[in-house]
Length: 102
Image 1 (cartoon, helix red, strand yellow):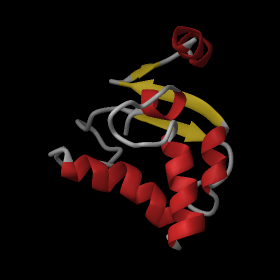
Image 2 (cartoon, helix red, strand yellow):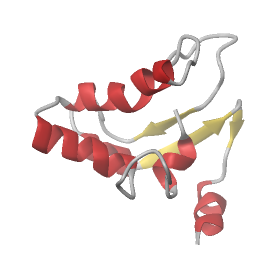
Image 3 (cartoon, helix red, strand yellow):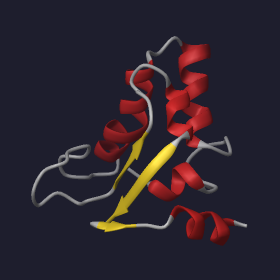
Image 4 (cartoon, one colour):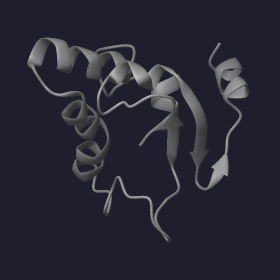
């Protein structure tokens, strides 16, 4: 899952500014459940890009993930309240990432 894609612009992968917006629109306009939209944007996207076993948190797997308050499988708006970002096993500073984006 692309952490930067959730926080920063995501050029080339979507005609929309935000993958979170794309997921919300998929739910509202296309009738996907929040869980289906989240899986399409993460695990399925990883499979399409050739990732081996994407979407798994287990020993030996790439440690790229984020945690949110709330349940994004029930409401994709929860993706807007990120509490932790980990990339390649390293906890990232959200404020520094946002500062780099501006």
